[in-house]
Image 1: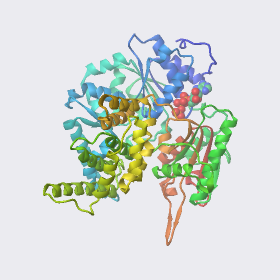
Image 2: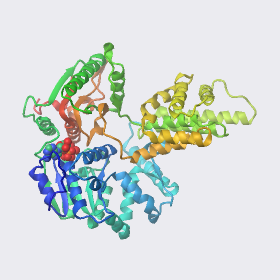
Image 3: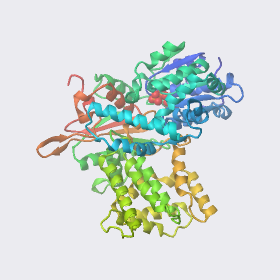
Image 4: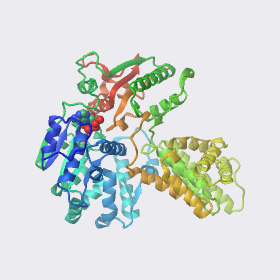
Length: 617
Ligand SMILES: Nc1ncnc2c1ncn2[C@@H]1O[C@H](COP(=O)(O)OP(=O)(O)OP(=O)(O)O)[C@@H](O)[C@H]1O
């Protein structure tokens, strides 16, 4: 087969393995380590398919797990100057979720789901499950309680889907599997539109996704990309034997690009990544990998982090890298926040570091709904009731799948106080002076009394500041959470919709619905650009991404009087050798190999990360 039509440009030399992929027919399995060029060759292969075999109206489907990966793939496609733009348009990059959702929305009724379906987003799911969860202790469950909790959660999610048509993400694949297995018509409809499907990160497919791949493979040509050692989703059902399942089910041609490393060419980052998997370090130093140990206290730790960031920034500026990116990867949610705070206000008066922190969004999204409601005119009777409802939602949903007992209790006491107030009102009595509603209501009224302007940015901020400066500590917390959502920076669409609402109605009549819809759409948006600048994120979220430099930063043992040091926020749980397993090693390797030019690992001096010790140490 000939290569896709070439335009005049600086040519990337394809490796022998990559060229073999271009020559091959039928189902393909392309394996290889981090940066071995799997994504790149799959895009070139897709362009070749578009040019040589697709009929008008048909497209190549590229399926990825995360939106973050989608944006990287979209960027990589744009970057391939040798692919003409009309061919690029025919490579459709989607997440598994968005692809499944479209199938479900159109055909779900065939398996008994209601005709109208809506997406149950993660915060919505957390709220819906909070009543099931509040009946059980949040931690230290017995095995029996864990099973019971799982079963009760599952039953509620199925009920929501089947009776209310609100479908959570985890049910997409099982339902689509049922649909595809049950209907050859749907299978051929999909195959007619997408005769070739590329499956990114195939090693992470769980059983229900595999069931779908099995049916699609009968009609479509599959191109699976995988690195068995970048498997990070064991906890939600990825199976080490998945590649063999594919080989067993279909005749696939296997291509192994594993020895190549283009991402960090000229460094030994990939080599170090491989040694991390075994714990046998073949070298005492690795080009492109730096280690630093800090004194195990907040100030020296953060000082070292900030100076490391300064140094990385300087290196990239000196190397004249355009749109450079530095990722600070940390092991826990808590660390993401700590680091973000420290970069905003570094110790010892050092200059702040502008950055983006990728945080769990539940609290911020639910908080944003409260701001949106407060922008909305309070002229209708149920406005305050709706406000209380959203406040309870915030507490029920802010912890995502792991709500704290305290937050759930908070929701319950707000609801109780509200019902009590309603009862007192109904019997003609005044409100209780010591009710938790007093401050809530006072700030609510201040926010409702604001004179809004029709400029969504200004108005959004005005409401947020009112909560921030008001007398209610709960609403203060919400205002500070909402800062993380940077809602109005999320593209013009939301801002335009709010402005339109104002123009049409002389006020924001639909601000809440508009905001909620914006967040739902965001789950499926594929146009987000890969991040540049300094980005702080949980190590788990770095999968599939690449950055010019990576800094890995973990917590340190915290001394406690009369007790052993508290060793949370470590890459390995408690930094204990007993807790090392394949998953921990693979996760660490994924993080380390995200760096193109350098990866720096910062670890506490007194108790360095156990994965960095040689096996026999
Ligand atoms: N033959 C090649 N020559 C030079 N650079 C290449 C070649 N193939 C890929 N690259 C570049 O190497 C980098 C990594 O490639 P790619 O993203 O395709 O790897 P990958 O195998 O998909 O990585 P991962 O599994 O870690 O996501 C990209 O910046 C890409 O442009």
